[in-house]
Image (cartoon, rainbow, N blue to C red; front, side, top):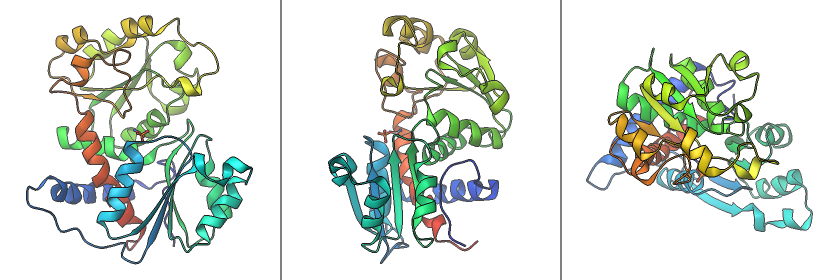
Length: 307
Ligand code: CP
């Protein structure tokens, strides 16, 4: 059986736990002071990173993970590919994979592209979702879970508030699907225009419109970026009002001096987080990034591991 990582939806809990556990092994290698010796698990395999949307963290951490595991790596900024000349997505992917590619990591602005590729590419090519529209970002959720487990140990019963642009966030969807399986109690926080009406019923989360109540009742918070590129109309009056009502401002950060703060990045400083919050000792932003490399190494290992 060939493995793909198309989303957290459909990923068995045993596989989630296995990836998280193996990511602990890889983070130990990344954290050690001596130059680490990585296993060349992907020797003679070729991985293509196909990013149709901008990325800093996901793309570079996949590239590092692939290189460290010994793969041959092809990375393409798809905005400058022949897609711009009118070639269809499927034709472009068939051309690239005809160059004897083993794994495709794809990021695309449209939800469902990894599933579409699964239908059209050869079974032997393994597919990893690097973020599809507002649908899912499974490796982000896995790295967030790994960061949380490093802080708390068991996540059973721990309360997380996910704050901001829930509506357009693939990070929120994947995290809700994953963290609820690990026993966390999840509250989504924001203006009603940024939280879909059906969210509470569909995902079984609590909806809260007061950030101050949410901060007072959480063990950890995750701030999300306002995704203007996915908004076709103004969903809140202005950035200043959003910051005042839903930002983790310096004042709110100081009021909860030990509350861990996650952010998947990229962060809009002065909007969802003030500088003081982003740079505080309880901001986990940079630890998340390091964890991201370890988790992506674990995912790549899992693709080719025994059932
Ligand atoms: N968190 C995240 O996906 O960041 P990038 O867009 O930089 O990859």
